[in-house]
Amino acid sequence: MKKYVLIFLIILLTFIPAGSEQTDEASRWTKVTEYNYVDTDGIMGLEDIYGFSFLLKSYNKGQYEPVNGKFISYTIGQYIIDCQKHTYKIGVMDSYDKNDNFINGDYNKYATFQPIIQGTAVSEISKMLCRK
Image (cartoon, rainbow, N blue to C red):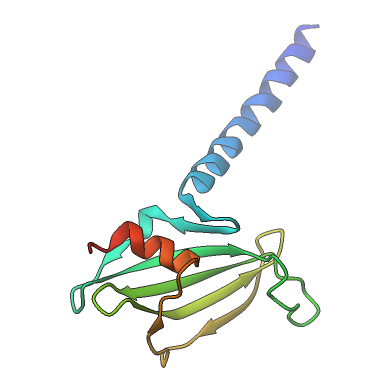
């Protein structure tokens, strides 16, 4: 009987650290809108403009087509918002499958600023970060 209790405790202790790592990973993403989460630990103010850089995780609700036959579960994009001009641009967009495996990356160093559209996740983040 002691042998089974010892085995159970070893198995239990093996899985406790893995569970806490997942909790830490999940807690860094804060819900902004349905299907969209911002990495609150990664929000950075910019020096050259009154704006911010942040990561936005967007779950696929049918807007992303499969890439090379692989279904995209979510994307993580690196966004920059300009608070004075109420504009944004996306510099990096990485796609992942449901097992968190990288599928594809789009690194657009030539991205241009576009108007922020009301009702979007970027609009909600802009309301949180930019002073009026």
